[in-house]
Amino acid sequence: MKTGHATALWLSLPALMLLAVPFVTLIGVTQWQHMHLAWGDGSAISTSMGLGAIALLLIFISGLPVAWWLSQAKGRARAIVELLVMIPLLTPPLAMGILLVSAYGPYSVPGELLGKFGWTLVNNPAAFILAQWYGALPYFITTARSAFAGVPQDILDAGRTLGASPWQGFWRLSVPLAAPGLASATALAWVRAMGEFGIVMIFAYFPQGMPVQLYNNLQNDGVDAVYVLLWLLLLFTLPVPLLCFVASRRVRYGSSSVES
Image (cartoon, rainbow, N blue to C red):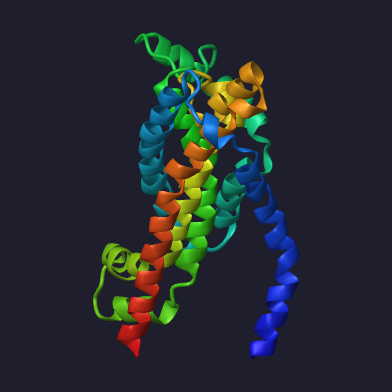
């Protein structure tokens, strides 16, 4: 068994090196003695973190029922919904930004209706949230669906036999048992929302979040101006995935200890 693990580790080295080298390089190229924020970096951080938190909440609320339904449904309706979830994943983000402008911009039917009330969904905080929501939602649904699909069906059947309603079975059985996978889905959605550039760039250039600010720093001041905000992007974004990882491990190993 140990030999197999050692072999797998050696075979993993090319992928691990590919992932690690850019960040090892980042450590070396950062001018630590000249670390300072560029103009607009502070506003970009607060924009991404604040509006990103709202987008993550919307992603969780809207994506959770879709993921659960996909894990339980069968037939043509499931295939259609899976296609709806998959298409945004296959479409380049810049193209999705253009499509969102076409669908919700001031010259679209929804945009004209909003315009009658003096509202708009382009280049404002609401558009920023919508862009992050749209960009990260399919990733959350796909991962959460796999988590729900991994819940043993016999446990759900036992719950129904004991009189649990579908709602009770969902909250008291499916969600707790799928919690580690749901934590991973939440972490992936957060990272995807924080790093969303293409959709935000086209649909919600203002207010500027961290990815767009990175692009502006590169264009205005060169590559050296990017590193500070890049470090801050990692610093502020990583805690959520790390907390999700710790929570999922506690749930998984806590369940294992209870079963044993």
